[in-house]
Image (cartoon, rainbow, N blue to C red; front, side, top):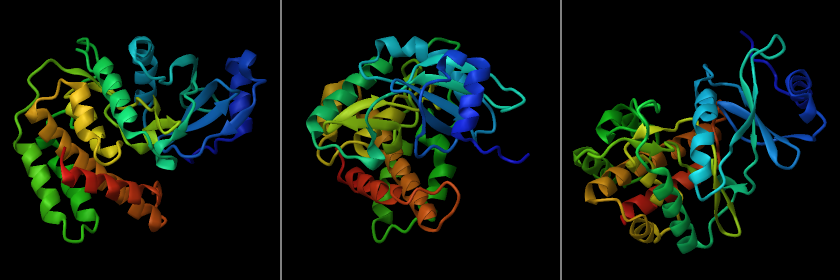
Length: 296
């Protein structure tokens, strides 16, 4: 099936069909997005359109669980307010959500590192509570790093590491050797990287894109200590988080290495003009990898 071109006119037509009271608001495309395309709707809302995601599962997950999680999280997160159902005009799901103001970190920067470390720690402490039995469970993502060796190898072989390959491999091997998470599965965002957080006034101000949220090992999110935060702030983050033992930090550091390699690979793909590539992710991934190699 040919991919449908998503335009402002299409978004307005869908709103007129299903949520006519919102159809008069200004509609502006939001740059970025791969699985879903985002359109700003007025000042306080956004429309999330299923695009490349082959199933609506990720959107339906956000619809089901974000209203449960959002009220107890200390940073703004996108919360569904209206559901758009597949129709003849657009045979996929779309959701009207609250807009999280700020600039995506992959286009911005953190200058208040200590504040950002404390803010991220507080957010993850609030998120990482025991998930209910009906929560989505981990497959590869969300489990022990040892379950993700194939992904790591693809990323590891896919980028040039210029003399640091052995050090990166050692960090990964240490994560794979670390003891597994022994607590109950907790809520995990699952995909914390620079495009999925927003910043303002030099610090973290919101978390977005919960399509990969699941119940699993909190180390997947703790990797953000290196992937998101400036150099030298990981130790402050772990002190403020105060729940990560040595094994969790080892797993998190290895996962941060894998995520950094993924960012580098996406940057490389962007440099080569490949679909889905993000040229500006390459430098962000390499900087994160340098932070990973320095440790806590």
